[in-house]
Image (cartoon, rainbow, N blue to C red; front, side, top):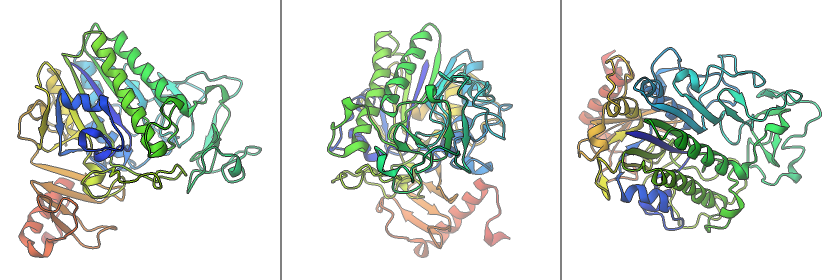
Length: 470
């Protein structure tokens, strides 16, 4: 089958109407659920973006490799191009592979990319035949698109310079130019000013190549549709990283006011429209029946993430994480349990809801199986082949590993969730999610044997010796 992975950014479990949202409607995402399976226990691997994307493409938990935290916009590629990836395995299986949208896995050598030359290693070196991406996030410089290793529309006479350490003489920033910004900042986003918005990091030059935030969804959706159209005659894999609903939330004017929640709510609607564009072209080309479509998110929700965008004042009764506690950056369920919906009409009867536990780290080995590609046991070390669960089998993973923005781990086995001691939790915690989904009551002292059992299992997964065995 063709495989389309649509990966939202900072979208919470409760941010879609298929999972109970009423302040915003997401008919296109809901359509995938109506025609497929909505997983209630689908997880990303980390509550922040870069490590989740890393794990998904490599089949390896990000905590196993240094340097996989949230990357600056000028970081080098953090994926080893000499090792198989989800994309390279599918390419070897005969798929045309493409990446569109948010990347945030680094580009170029370890020292970082030269934005004015061919940028490699990058998507091509890890298995993508084509790519049209943003290097990092919308709030980080450089604010340019990169097509197949070259900055799009770059004027050689106006070269790009990027620094995450110092500004450039003669250029204003978000502090000195604050009164003129079209979106004020709360913290951090006050370095370079691009399109009237303060960013993280400083940038000089590249004026002809700069993106316009309001047009970004249209640009990426057009590229996704173009890739599918050009690939229709052979199996293809599209990794479509939506920029919504990451900050800065600057939806196109036609989406402004579509919700009562301000820019964040309107950006959810815009993201849903992007999903609709993919579904539309699949229908028009007669590809929907044998195309596996997966919709998910890189981590849980965040409301105020550094800009004055009314995300708190206009939130109302909306619960971005739905019934879950926490969100982006946290070790709570809301940090890693995310929207996770799958459609494949040829193999899946529609309208199903599944409680099977499944993780995005499983995509690597599962997609390989679906593509008919055999994978050696030492490749994708943390990925499990879950094609049966993905197509409706009630049996999912035995355990889920969760990873916070502070490098803290948790382990879910059945209804039990064990959280190792860390900066947020002064001591280890144990929750029974069957009766305490909000993780309000630490029952570790009441179940010492369960704590010992799960602590030992998590230590084995991490690759260390439990403290009581030292």
